[in-house]
Image (cartoon, rainbow, N blue to C red; front, top):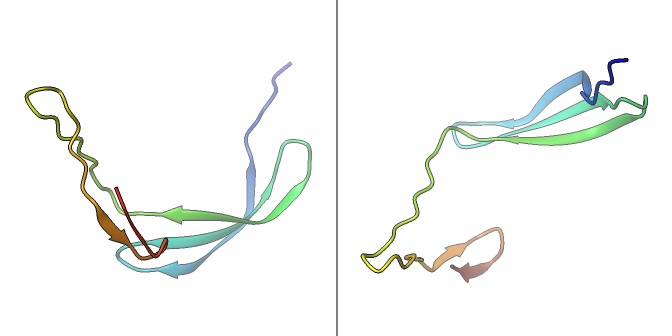
Length: 74
């Protein structure tokens, strides 16, 4: 017996699509038959994360303001 855990996308539409982010709303059917609507998907362009280490193997962190949080965080 083959059991599938894949969701089936029944419908999909972009709510926002620009060069920095896309927000998609999908209508999905999960394996037990339940319909999930909406299921939001965030799509981003390719990026790189870098972790800088000192000679002593210490991690360097930068404080910066994050508008969505309205806070300055590491």
